[in-house]
Image 1: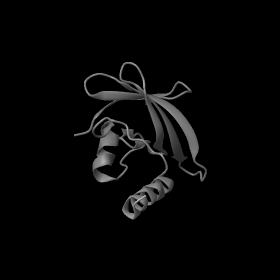
Image 2: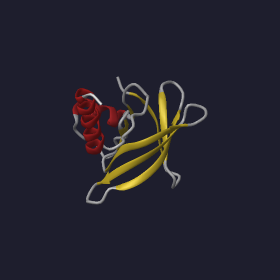
Image 3: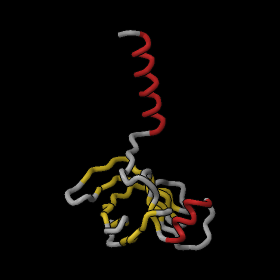
Image 4: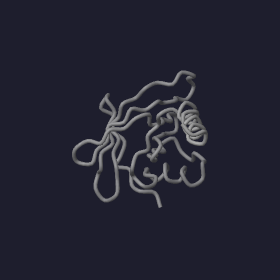
Length: 124
C-alpha cells in the first residue's frame, strides 16, 4: 500500500474513532418550534419550551441528543438511534426515535414512550 493512502486511511480511522459513527439526518437545515429556532439563531434559551431538530440531532431546554445511526423508512420517515445528555445527569442514555415528515416542510419526532415533538417547522 502506498504511504499516502495508508496515511489517509489511518487519519480517517482516527477521525471515526474520535467522533464515533454519528449519522446526519438528510433534512437540509434546522427545524423547530419558535423558541427552538430562536435558540438555533442566538444560542440563548429564552424559554423552557425550545424544541430543535438539526441534521446532527435534537434538543430541548433539558435534553440534547446526537444521532449515532439512522435508517430510512418507507414514506420518508427515519428511525434514529441517538445518544442523549440530560440536564443534571452525567450519564448519557440511548434513545431510539422516529422522525416523520409532517407536511409543509415540517417534521415530528416520536419517542417510544408515546411522547411526540412537533410539528417542527423549518427555521428561517
